Length: 393
Image (tube, rainbow, N blue to C red):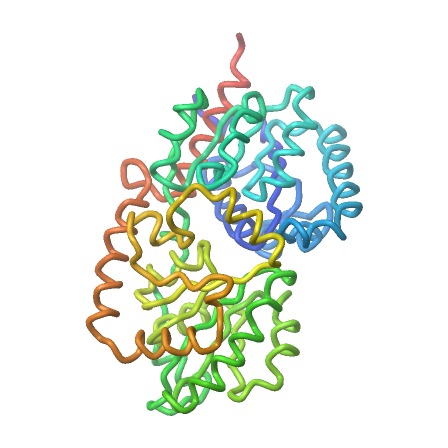
């Protein structure tokens, strides 16, 4: 069936955080390559706006995480959910795509279940990691579940839920295409400077948790590695928070907000400290040796430790099936521990090389079916569902 020849579909897309915004933008681009007249509505950020989306409300209203952190925002989140449901009911799109952000997205899918609109959830909820019993709530929430990790279809299959692996979008991120020389020239850095990437997170609610310990770590690191220069890649939305929080650091960091500068910084970097999540895969693709660190509210941590069912937090470690990069979490997220970890990453060449070899194996396993790009595989799955829904019974 020639989908492009059909009446142009209206696809309603929700992204609830910065990483989802990137996925949404690539998905919109891939769909338009196949159906040039495709129209889009929904909620997204800057990247999706650049693809022509007029967001129903700001993405930042949804970008919050943690049990305790969500509580003050419940009323606003409830209003935004009502707005999204009302907009879908009014516009009657041909298909709804929700991207990640399961706390909001799955509630939305449940609320619109009775509208008879095709629903796709992109980025499977990570219930395999914790609260596995939640999988019982999923039947009927979506018509298609698109997974980023190769082991997820088997997990959901064991629970009677069909799921499709489309490959991990980090492979399309360009994180391995940076130019180290350009970074040094752009920021007028001496050749002796050793670049340390610090990635505190993408949400305004989580960034303040890691930046103070990063600052204390740098104070200790000055006596060990005086030529280390910190670089903090963040979104433009989060940058003002970072600027304020780092104003009194012993070494003022370079704050980068553009994708090219971020990838150039990766190419220049000798080591990184990052929160857990997709950032570990970006750094792995760029070949940057790293340690993973994170700190959440103690109450959130208390409950999380009793619910987590996987041996590793860092995605690189989880996919490798072993500890490739150190995980310095909660009580180990301390300035002295982090300083020692950074020193080893810069000074122990064999250790750094071992990490890089493991990265290559992990990334190979994230390639999409039939060597397709992840966004293309996702677009094909979505358009196939749309064509199926449009076909006469």
